Image (cartoon, rainbow, N blue to C red; front, side, top):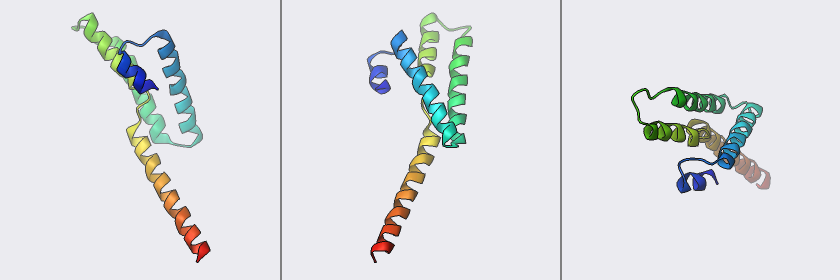
Length: 106
């Protein structure tokens, strides 16, 4: 849903901000519960980038600064390394389950 919102508008509304922040906090919690340190690291780095986006831009126009802040905002949930690791583990577990099932049937 966020990707649809992002494509629709780059400047988030208050409702979109609240939704994004809730998803961000839930994603942090799910990574903590599942001991996914890489995911937590990526989310903290995203939050740091978002925070820094508000402080930088001495020589930028307001439009450029807003674009940097909005891009950082929409990237808060991106965790490509953690997502790749999760997918690799999921494939390995699925393969192990299939092998066990085949061994049980045979």
